[in-house]
Image 1 (cartoon, rainbow, N blue to C red):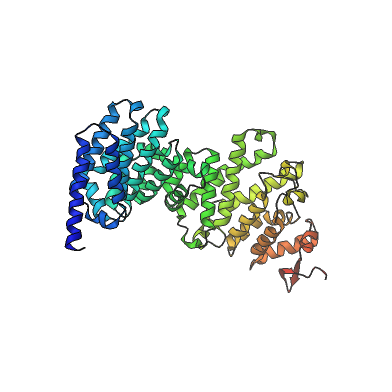
Image 2: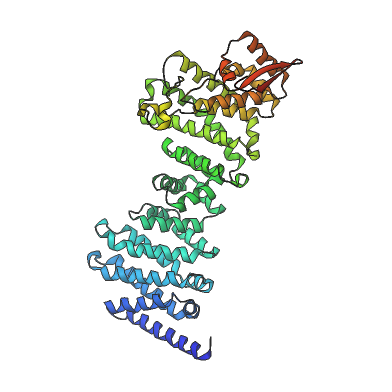
Length: 486
């Protein structure tokens, strides 16, 4: 910048400081709003942001503080101009922090964070009759905090300390969608591992639950989804405390986010710790009996249905975790997970055979083309198939689990589920997959299947129709593919 430009910039700053100072000594008028708008506009320019002197900001803070006092004590119905002036102060603050570490530091040192947060609290508490006028300064004030926090750890920590948890909770509960969006942005910018620990404490869990509620009710709000997937799902303490405080409907949302995170392309970096996987496996074991109520009239209430859907979602997550995710294969050794899964498959299969119910095999393939009646869209679609899939995953290259399934009489059970079932698309493929994993390098399991083939208690025609054959060669039993026309 040349000396002439520097001098002009200095003069402009002095003029601007003097103009803003005039607002302090006079009754509010539209001219004051124009002064602030001029300042806000000037701050859009990078050179101007770099050149603003501390005095201009100090004066602006005094204006903001005066407005804060007036709105606390004044009549809101006659405060339209004050609210406009407040919004403009926040806009100036917001613009001054754009990619400007010097101004971020300066505004923090002057005390803008404390005054701005107190102001936001007052605005949020104002009566609902004048909400529309309040939303504009609320939005601008929250945007200021977002810009102030970007790349500045001290600002992040101060904003968190002064707004957590109550004010953040109030702003996330606001009636205005943009207020909620901008608050989510600030929360995402400020949050880190230590702050997740704060959220994990029982007295603060409501804020975490609010974020999860927004993930469910406003799925297009990216910030809350990012907060959940990048931070919440990485903390066992937070996942446990949220899960215990959630309705079953909310748990399904949490599990859907978890599932989506597991399906990301870079699966190895999904960030979900082993401790969370163990917690989910235990939760599945504890609650899996709820699915059985769907076969009876006791499933009439929505709460019972949601509990069952939670179990189904847990199963989906466990299937995904044990499919091509090496970091979760320790679940093969999770106490009694395999036993629980085999026993549940046996119960579901027996219930489905005993009478016509939601677990009975069906041949209603019209539902796949969208022509089926609504009753065909069963909540347990694929449930049996996924139980078999999980068993297959848990037995992959694991001799102890292969043997355990044999001892639990799970092999004939799986073979009995090789039939086509429209309630369980791909179940026959999952059954073949599981049988392959059960027979691999396990002579005792191979012998059992050969003996079953000779006695013929199970329907092997389905196996043959799918192109598979159990064959004994030199005392070993193999599951082979055969040509359909042979």
